[in-house]
Image (cartoon, rainbow, N blue to C red; front, side, top):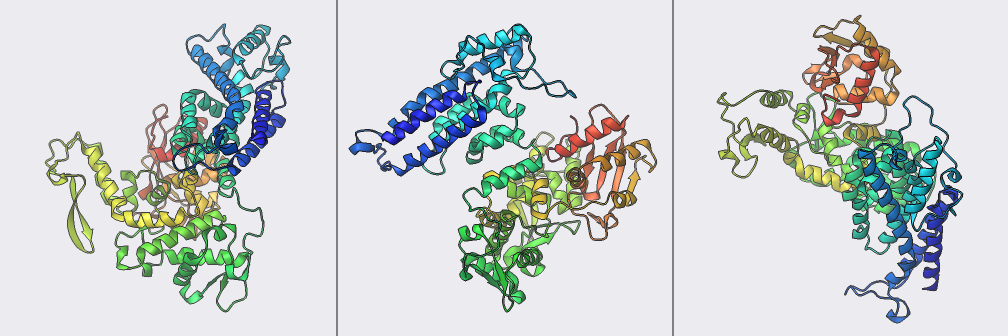
Length: 623
């Protein structure tokens, strides 16, 4: 009890120092978080709370466990005051942008100018202040910032100066709240805290996104909170999200560069080349999941090798076996290059176990940064991520049906006499069966008013309901290694890159094998600008462009001349679209067509193209 009380008091003192702008941020932040981790560790070693809900305390229940957190309440109160003050000033700024503290809060750094040197904390904290602003920030902050404003000095605003400090204290607050909760539960007090200060916290991460990766780890453990910040998280560079993904995925695992070296001979996965799929399935199912996370080693029966090269070969062979038609697990998409779960996979009596095995293999490969030589349809990547499918995803399995759905959406069907109802006929093992899209669907007519719902329900039937058991089996295996909260950091295009890698793209080969239509010619200015922009793009951006237009990051063997469309070979095509301001490029992935507006300048073309690539999965056409 004395140790915990002392640690709580030291943490409070360190937290107050951290909230003082004159203190050393790095030193105080590390000190606070180290002490709080120690405090939580010692707290969890104490007596556990009984199932009857009473707080089993120290000293024979004389001192409830929760009492040891009392010294920290002053720090949490100070944190709350800081955030409330900033929220108040943000609100003032919306109605009055001059003559108040608020004018400092949202100073925007000038575009295309170098950032000014950040002010020394002593410039902000006036000589009359003792520098300790933790307990009551309101008066000191107002006084010092007004003084700063009157002095007319340049520098970052108060959000930039305080965001990291306050975020570190928020992390400490979360750690203390969490250690009082059962595993897997987020503290209601902390959820209430985040919801209360939602605007300020979003302002923090918008201005300095690295705060998410440095201090907002709680987002990964609470879907409700994650959803509030997801749009900001996904706006961060792919590389930084990958680093954050692996940092948390591998948390708790021993650091080692010998991933493929087993702890003992019994940990080696012994598989047979002539039955690699079934023998691998058997040994993986028998293996301990935690041991597989620590490291994997594979040996082929009758062979000596167990090194990293053997592991890579194993994953590569299994990539091809998973989509082997003999197992009836996956079927080819319309373009013949990507794969989708087979709705009739039950012809194989072990199909759901095999789907679980396929999920484990892809999860294990991603966990250990091994690439797999398999590409799925966009809709299946969405299923892995928990993203709803839309009617455009139907094109991967039935381009003509997708066109029909598009036609229904684009046209007034009021007087056409289509006599569609909310039920469809679908093939079940060669026999046609009528399936309702909703309760009583066979008696509900599709009208102009409800046609959007009809199209979405048809899409969900064909792309989700028809393969739901297969999806569930796959995810059961995948989530053994990859938590849903972590994988949702990515969109469906990025998941493909995570699993299958970044392809090398030969831009000259791309140019040679591109066709033009709807008014464009090879030597038009817009086309010349387009290829100049493509050559200026990063490798990652080129891959996004390829995905945006073709639906896949894969470049076929032989190059761009062999790109497949919904009806066979279909070269990359650029079609002209009349230009209107803010119009974005769009695409038709089933025919590999980029619909490129006739932009008036290269600069506008590049800007609009990059916006389209970053927002491609959201269906925007204007921005």
